[in-house]
Image 1: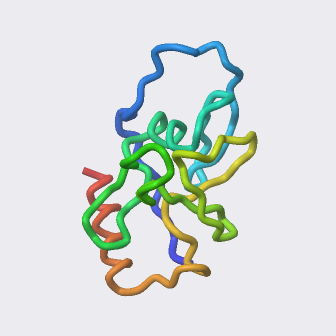
Image 2: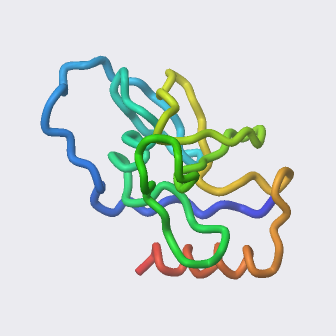
Length: 126
């Protein structure tokens, strides 16, 4: 499995303005520690900790969800075991670990996917 470059820490896409008194929950996103609040969906957790949910497997760049109601399939993320989860309709659980790129054991890294991953990593450094 190729190394997944660490996510850079750009300003979050979501900024929480209310309901800040809910208990914090620890999770991992791409192997890095992150936090969410009880009751958050994975989409909220991902966008509160960065600016994207995943990269398009068709080469048109970062994705951040679209319909927000489980219909468009634009917010799929993966568990380390390869299970796909809809970020917009999956509640965060304590200790949860998600990947914004499919694990190589379940989705072979083709040359075009390798190029996309390299391009995305280079853009994250800028």
